[in-house]
Image (cartoon, rainbow, N blue to C red; front, side, top):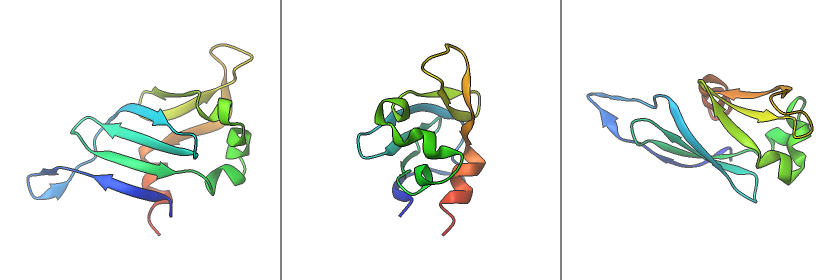
Length: 101
């Protein structure tokens, strides 16, 4: 299961996720993703990191080096500051597409 827990607040009549404000990586390759309206997703990446291009994140230290950048989660190459592992980047749309199952 890609999404283990979804905590959301209703805004008007619909469901609103909003902008990512924080991410907490966990030892079990899940990410607690927090959004501006108080919504949270516990996103399980165990299956995703077995696929290209995310297989570079199999290393737990590298996986835990996730940052929020603009509207996405990014992993930087730990050997070269400011260089991202291309294309290791997840946007809100990528996450929602992955959890559609």
